[in-house]
Structure formats: C-alpha cells, structure tokens
Amino acid sequence: MLKRSLLTLLALLALLLIAPISLLPLLAARASLDAPAYLLTLSLWVALLPLLLLGLANILLKNIWFFPATADPLPLETLRERLLAVNAMACPVAATAKRKKIIVTWRIAAMQWCELLSRLGIDRLFELHCRFDPDTRTVILVDRIRHADFLICPQQVTVSRRHIPLPLLRARSARLRRIDDYPTLDDHDYDFHPREIKSPVMGTILACGWNVRFSLF
Image (cartoon, rainbow, N blue to C red; front, side):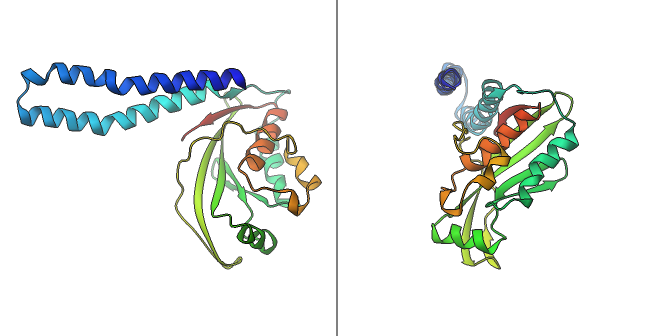
C-alpha cells in the first residue's frame, strides 16, 4: 500500500507539470500567430487539457492500483453469485445486477437502513460499480457518488445523478474483509464509510481468483 501511495503521489506531481510544459509551445508561437488564431489555439488548449489530464490520470490509476488474485479462479457466474449473496444478508448493503456489471451501494430501499442513514445525516450515497473482464479475469472497480435527500423513508428518497469522486484508495477494512463478514456486525457498528462497501467486495473478488483494478470510469 505504501509503495502504491508513493507512486500515486509521484504520478500526480508529473501530471501537474504537464499543464505548464504543454503551454510552452503556445507561448513560443505567440509571435507568429495573429490574435484571433492565437486565441482559438489557446481556447482549444484550455478545453482539451482537462480531458487529457483525466485520461492520463485514469491510465496511471489502473496501472498502479492493480491487485492480483489470491486464489485459483472461479467461474464468472460463481463470482457474480458471491457478490449478489449480500442481498440475503442482514446488512445495510445491496447489490444490483445491471447488464454486464454489478452495482453495490447502501440499502436505502429498506426501512431499517433508510431511517438509520437519515438519522446519521448521511447525504452522500457511495456506489461501487463492478465491471467484469472474463478474458483477463479482472474486475474493474469504479467509484460513484450520489447525493440523497431522505424526505420520507423509504418511499420518498430523492437521489441525484452519479458524480465521479476522488477514488477511494485506502479501501481495506480490518472488520470487513469479505462479504461473508457482514452478518458479524450489528447496526451500530457501521460508520457508513465507502470502505465498508469497497473492502469486502474487493476481498471477495480476490478470494474468488479474480484480479481487481481501480478505475475512474
């Protein structure tokens, strides 16, 4: 974990240097371009730079935050069943299968957990999107956040569109290493931190013989 953190820090520093370095050719060409052409070129640079940085950041994230499997690989359907098994457990987490991925989030549709989330003032719902790559036996984990307003539980809970947060890198939890650990906790044991979703999901995937890779999208 320390090695990955240091590599991530160095990668961020390198990304921060890209902006001023990429601006140098524009500054050098200032004298040879008329004002409209220069403003157009500068506008394109301003528009494309965030996309470039985001793409590079995602490439670095996917390469640095890669975790190899810890067991012999199980079939994809078995892995999906292990992840969806959380729905039968007495815990505040639910998993939904959508097309070729599984989304794991807080169980706001259940009165018990909806009211608890409301009492604790939780207004940001973490979602973990699990995309499966059978060819490499890798599950790509993507973090998403939705803002929630608990008006009347659970009938009137409004949630916003999904947003891209900073990725949760320190994902491991000592209490929740796998999905099977959920029944060992009581209601008051949960902090409703994203780690309480990401850690057991990640641990279950690795124990099923599949790799894990973090990604922004």
